[in-house]
Length: 315
Image (cartoon, rainbow, N blue to C red; front, top):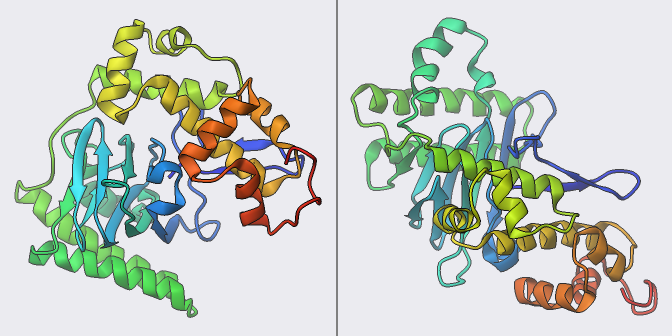
């Protein structure tokens, strides 16, 4: 999921590269693993922002169901099922009918397996470099997939317990998981087809442009120009891949950045709104309330435990 951080000056550092791929903050520096549990209710409008990264992503649904979008394709991840998303695929998850969903999310960088070049070339590269393999849907009713899903649960529990050397056990499990995936791939039953087409590249360019220029006054024409397409084509691509308009996506990102500023700084709400690209406080407050179910002032007090009168007048 796309995340933001603040530097010591209170300025936003967005965890995306210049091409808008996500910078993954691993659980421990030097070990390219990220293991977390989450709920869609923690995201504005119960929808994560579009992103991609060089890591393999594994999702397992604990409770509920999730809409999952990959390169414009819409899947429904059912309870106890999951998915493996290949590297550099544009994806995000959202709720179904605004219902909550809890899930495991595990990211692992292919570099974790690269110490032996022969093993890496023989077992990983054929899948990583296959443009037809965007993802593998993990069906809990399939024995091979059930093993992978159970392994994801075991990895999460190992991290929770945090015993000395737990990372070694997790890495060992990943090798077994990858063996199962590689055997399916070799047998000709990998995943869902679909190589990156021109529209996917254009979408990435436009999302990247929004991530880098969200503080500025952006128009539909400017967003379309960043992808080298006309405005109608721009809207068509956003609807296809993100199920929302370019301006709605822009505002969703601005709201997420503003939520971090509300939690991490003492800046006034007016200042935060302006810094995130909103020219009118009333419009910002209206959108924020619609997405988060509370006003910016209520949000700040909820997450920071502030008492009335301790923040600026418009906080």
